[in-house]
Length: 258
Image (cartoon, rainbow, N blue to C red):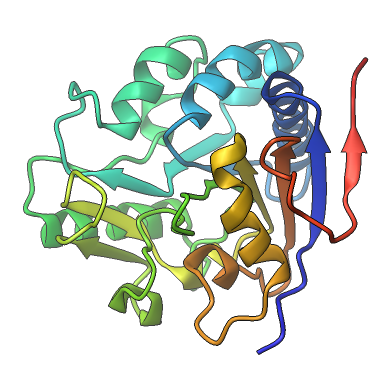
């Protein structure tokens, strides 16, 4: 099997520079979408180190648009752990504390799971909320999805060799056997990831270097989950720091604000 086209690869001298550029891209995409025919910006966020990165950089980047611009945002989450929002593992809970407290996005436009439901019901409930938010789309089409990638190649809560990689009907799926705790989660499926207008993978640190080489360069009969994200008509980009990119031999664009 041929290695997938890697899309655009941008390498930054530090995670701080990456975060600043990512925030500027979000701000620019938001302004363009809000000014466009649909007059809204649909953003899907992932957890992990992205929370602190976006909390540090995004408020200042979007400040020029003011509250009026944020009124047109729709915010969802690419996956979520089935824990209370107050729990340290809750992706929405972390964003609520560190980022959303600084951004006046209307609560009605922030789409979350109901963590009190059993995992199968939580997935169905989240899918229903997404369909309501994306009325007119046969499948939810996000303007921008920001994804992470694990050292094992997982993205969202789609793990290597897991049956959910074959899911084609559901837009949100439950998972009860996540190899990474906590075990119960809900996740967007590959059909939603590949319907997005733009997908940006963010990876930093030397611990991601080996898996990024596999995803972006190697030819594998069973591609890792992150390698299966290939938007049908949208754009795919990788934002990496130098440590994460150190093993790559494919062409990439080097960025520095110095």
